[in-house]
Length: 157
Image (cartoon, rainbow, N blue to C red):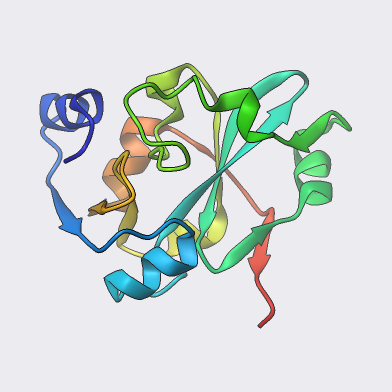
């Protein structure tokens, strides 16, 4: 079940969404596979540190973050991937690594890879390793107001 915080936020804003249960999976690619969702449509959250502040980089499961492009687009050299110990206590209503891409609920910026904006729906972890939420991307964008940037590229297989 989505965290009470996330569920309340979506319901208070009259957002239509569905929850999708799946067997336990821990990486974005595993989740996409067990849920039968293309990796390009499943959003994963990568925590980054920008000028000493934590932020969310949200990108398709089948993509990887290009930190150099983030630095360029954010016009700072002070961007790096965050270590789990830096953020694990910031999401008390979520299992570690299963936070939804709603940085606004946790007081942080959200940067979304342009590739995620190209589809009607977005799928993402709902605070557990056994459930996803599906909602329209336009609703996600309205609620979160992320900065859309080009910082992610498909992972080479």
